Length: 398
Image (tube, rainbow, N blue to C red):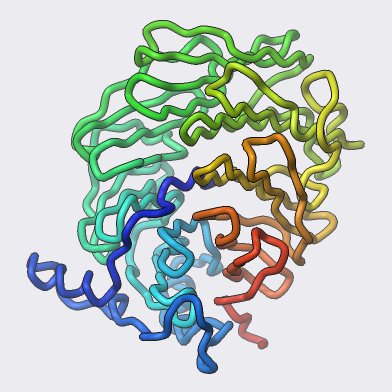
């Protein structure tokens, strides 16, 4: 899942200011989610906790009723101190760097992907407990209440809202765009056999195309999909899936290889100039998955946590992070570039099986991780070299 983070540098509204706005707008009633600690995000007070912050009991009842274990499915941070994390039937948030967390939402929506371009308006892909499709839903009060928006297929797997009006929705073979905050959508033309796409604007976008028996091709459009040109060719016998993320002139592509023995082979490619030139950053072969897609030298032959690739999170200034996790090795971690892929560094690992990351700069970021002791939220201020646990769903026996 998640996430090319476009939120770095935006002014964030405090939870108390948000509460006032909700009351002025006549929101759907008070919510315990909108109370906040006064502790500054940059200074951890002695009272800061690392457990479930008292939320487990209230969330557990809902999870038990739905026969669902508490876990995180996505997270989205506006700054090092302000952000949200979501799961089946709940959304929680912090405004003080994790010293305190509050329940923002509890209800029917099973969140899969959340997007907040500011601290008031947000969008999500979510299903209901009894449904299989993912609906687009929207909030105008920070996440306390949600309204379903029709107009998209129920197969969407990812959304991206660079601002409050411009948005994109994707599944592995199609892309849609909106210019009115999601009220209406139009399908964007993609090349045949697309297996991943990303748009920076209504006109500028990239798509990864699979050519059976030949490999991957990354294509670029500057006119909204009317015309496409090839900017990267990567040979591989059995291409099938790609993750593409863009931020400014940065273009990053994770090209998947084979899968086997709980292992995944992949290559990570990066461009600093809008696709004109590319660098093979990681070429991760594996015993179970075979060779990584592509040929030629790579900066590294092993990715973060020496495991499967997770989500990419991009920030301004050529900053990119990739999550990696190894279920068999029970470890999870990130790798980082601060120069658009010219250099790359894999960071130390934590115990874990899976997760998601959201970075707002070269050093500040968050990770939701499935650990041997349960799901937890971690924060880093040094680019993933060290992590501090800020929240965890404590197991009942603990």
